[in-house]
Amino acid sequence: MGTLLLQSLNAWWPETILSLGALAAMVVGVSSRRCGPALIVGWLSLFGSGFALWHASVPAGTSVFFGVILCDPFSLAFRWVAWGSVAIVLSLLMASREVDPSSVGEYVGLLLLIGVGLMLMAEANHLLMAYVAMELVSLSSYLLVGFLDEPRSSEAALKYLLFGALASGIMLFGMSLLFGLTGELGFSELLQASMGLSGPMTNALLLSITLMLAGLAFKISMVPFHMWTPDAYEGAPIPITALLSVGPKAAGLALFARLMAALAPAWPTLEPLLLALTVLTMTLGNLVALAQTNVKRLLAYSTIGQVGYLLIGLMVHTRTGIEGLLLYLVAYLFMNLGLFACVVAVVNETGHESLEAFRGLSARSPALALCCAVFLLSLAGMPPLLGFFGKFLLFGAALEAGKPLLAIAGIVNSAIALTYYVNIIRLMYLNAPQRAEPLHTTPALRWALAVCGAATVLLGLFPGPLLTWLSTRTVVTLL
Image (cartoon, rainbow, N blue to C red; front, top):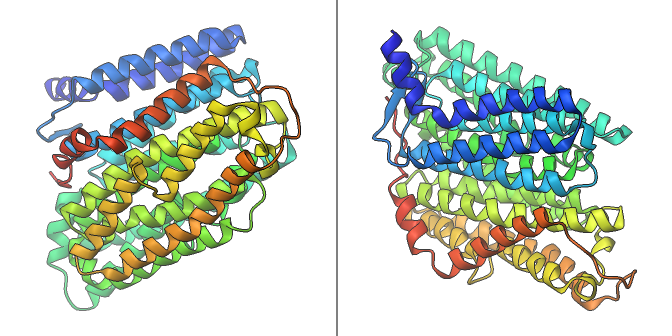
């Protein structure tokens, strides 16, 4: 047993380092009540975790900790997305004026724990591990959303908690029903057991899967379980809003893919419902975003629309679809977090979150306005930026799989989204600024903008290496 544990730890160094770093950051933060030491601990643990992740770049598919965790090429892509999300959000945390310096240790510790939870969600090979990972992310998120000393922050955290508790209860009930039907919790065992069910047992299986997917739909903001999203995004500190918009969505989609692979016999029956919800998700998100005047609420509904595009990769149920999903997730990581970096800069300077805060930004900070425009156009799917190639692959996979409705819905919704994205560009370039003095950014923000901007443009112009890397990580394995 000791040998097995050592082998498991050897494959799980990135998560181990992040976990220890989270505990250390909290202790240091409480001890000193200064932001510097906690940030140093956070960055050191992130760099250590990234180094360990780099050396775990080509796992053959290793089942660790007695089979509850699976380290394989598919999970590796999502582990990198989780790591990148935490790293960029930590930079935004350093730059945001919303964050109380005396609480940075708690921010950093909870942020790193969310990173561990996100990686675990992508690696879960067992229902209980999937649930524990989701709760680690959820509980840490509830705390971070309510960290601001404002009524709207407390209200947002309470709504998020209540919706989350309901979703967790629904998911647990589905898991318990599934265990009662099959007597199994491991994903590969569930696949074998579900294939042997027939008659009334099949209907019970469909009910249990529906309940589990309802809980997971809450995590990824899939309609009709999206209601918490705009309030939580508006009430949370901007860096936390940025994290919620990317990290949990990516990990939730990874877990969604594993669950559907483990419960493949139910797919033909559930497919029409999931296809309809995918179209509804992207349509509702983009249509409601048109009416928003607060930039955080606008980006909340934009996120719901983006989740609809990402779900296409799962709904087509092909290797090309998973490849498109992975590519668009990488694109979404850089373009959405880059846009939130612009929001941090604008809110730091103006003190409010309305779209009017972007008025005349090109005159006050041409470089920041240019970066913001690049991220917005990439989110809209304009070539030759990385967002375009992600959507191109997703929509192409839908056509290839004989599901043209998904492709048409995606194209129409991209046109709708272009309206509110271009509106922000119009405010930046075609309107006079409310204040004349230049807008300054911090080194941490400039670093985040440079990384996100370079990735969005260069990977859009030269997507070949990224596609090659992702093409080896499209198989959802079960061990």
